[in-house]
Length: 230
Image (cartoon, rainbow, N blue to C red; front, top):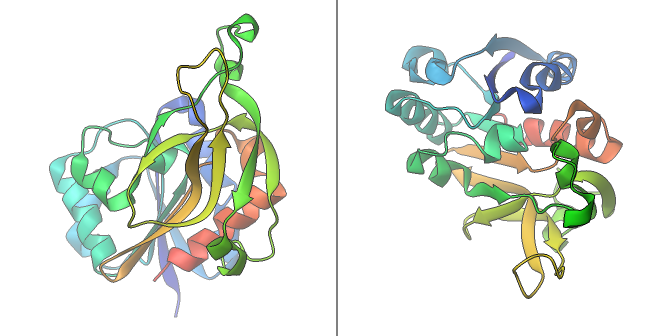
C-alpha cells in the first residue's frame, strides 16, 4: 500500500526550504510515498487530511503556527504519523509555541561564532569546523548504524533539550577565551523521540543544501524519514 508524505516548508528563506526539501522528494517517491507539498503549516489543522498522512517532513524555520495547527500536528503524531526534519526547519520552528517545543524535544538556542577578529557580518561568521560524534545508541540504531564520527564546516547548533529524546549523535562546543562559558557543552546533533503512537526524528546539520548533500548527513536524513514514517 502506498504511504503518504506531507512536506511542509517555508519560514526564513536563509535555510532554503524549497531547494532543501526538493533534494529529498525523489527519495521519498522512490521509497513508495505519495508526496504532497504545502507552504503553510495551517494544513496541520485539517484533521481529516492529517489522519491520512504517514510522514510529515517539516522545513519551516522560525515563523508562526496557529494553536489549531499545533494541536493538529501533535494529534497527528500521537495517532501514529511520523515527524521528521533537519536544522532550523524543525529545531527552530514556532518559537512561541511551548506545545510544539514539547513535541520536538529540543530547541535551537544559538550557534557559536568565530573569533571576533574573523567576523565579517554574514552567515559565514557562524561556520565552524566541528565533529558529529555517534553515541553508543547511535552505533546500533538503524538511522546511524555503520556511520562513523564525521566532520562538518557549517553552523554548530547549541540545543536546549529534555531527557525524553534518544540521542544518536552529539557535538561538543569547546571553551574559547572569547565566549562566556567555562566548560565544554555537549549538544544532541541527531535524536529521535517516541510520541504516542508516532515517532519524531531530528538532525541539526542541514543549514544549506550543500550540507544536506554531505554523504553522512544525507544518509542520516533519509534513514530518519523512513524510521519515523508510520
